[in-house]
Image (tube, rainbow, N blue to C red; front, side, top):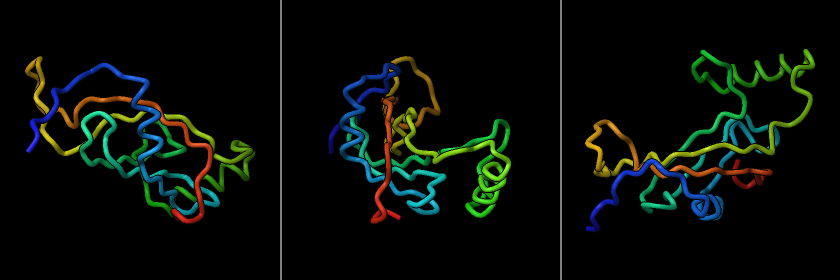
Length: 130
């Protein structure tokens, strides 16, 4: 068994290219009108498995909701002219959320993942993933 990498706080742009190539991206509720992207793959730094959900529309102070409620909300916003186009392409930051305990040189507790942070840009999603 390999020794876990130490937790870090610095982003590295090279992780972005590795992550975009290696993560499976599943649109929810479907590829025609995605509102959430489910990412599944291995962290480009520590190589441990992780998952991430990226909501393409969010409301400050409101917790994520059911897909049906989210779809109805987006429809209402579109009907009101507040959203005039698709929610893709999108760019967002991802932080490693693997379940491996990575030691922290600063002695902090309760940290999740190895700390790697990178940006992902998703232009579109394929129908095969939905």
